[in-house]
Length: 347
Image (cartoon, rainbow, N blue to C red; front, side):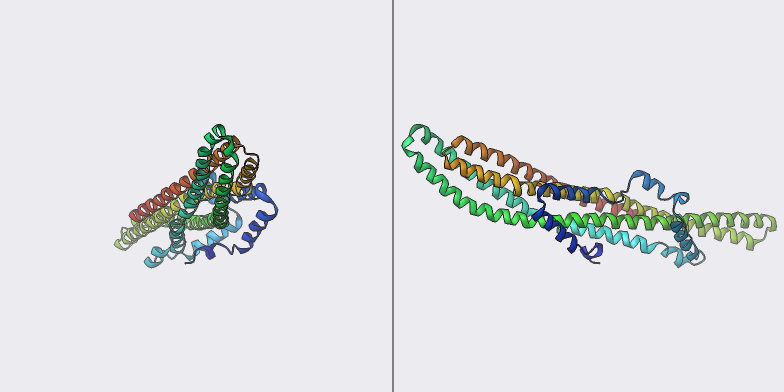
């Protein structure tokens, strides 16, 4: 089973994002990220509750359930065992796909880049601190000290430019992930609806079988024939086996229900990290560079210190969000594994 290709050909949407990044700036792209995280049909508690209510379904959905019901050959044990298996398999494969995506997600380099960025800033900060006493005690060394700071900044700027480019590349990949998570959410909703239809059709078939059982039982009581009694026994066994199958489908459906908020959690975490990185690339870092250059030009140590402190605070926030995202991914992976084990135990 493929991964990204299963959900959508995302090339057109990525090009749209890249165009927005170049033409529209941070705020519009940020708005679109939020829309992706919030748009679409949501798997609310009410929808979950109503999803098995035949009476509120559309005529098209009712017709589909009728078609499913008519395909059930209750006398065929294999047919009973295979009932809804395709819908169950889709959810099982989909869950495996989510797990693969979480495991294969390489967020380590983003963390290393952010740490490298902080290291560069702190390196300049330490040079500023070393220079400060000399400004107050030996004014004749002022130009010499600032020349050293300028040289340090020029070297550091090249490293920071490299880090910026790598962060930009990761940001584009994360934008793709946001889109894919959105399509995953929609696909999960499709699987949820499909297996719900099989459950409804199965429940209706059980109602029909119980009506037949009642008639068979009444006949067996009247005739007192062993053949009729055996038919009652066989029907009870058939109903029991089919009820067990519907129970299995309902257990699989629970996995789909639990998957929805987990997908949204992963998507929202990714969106928050994108926003912070993009804000840094478009606003914070350029502003920091401008302030550093201005401060170096007018020999202003205090401005240099404050400028460095401000960007360090911003980078610390991004690193915190990155670490939280990493932890939530691990928790989601454990939760999915746990749900799979529960499902396997119950089936």
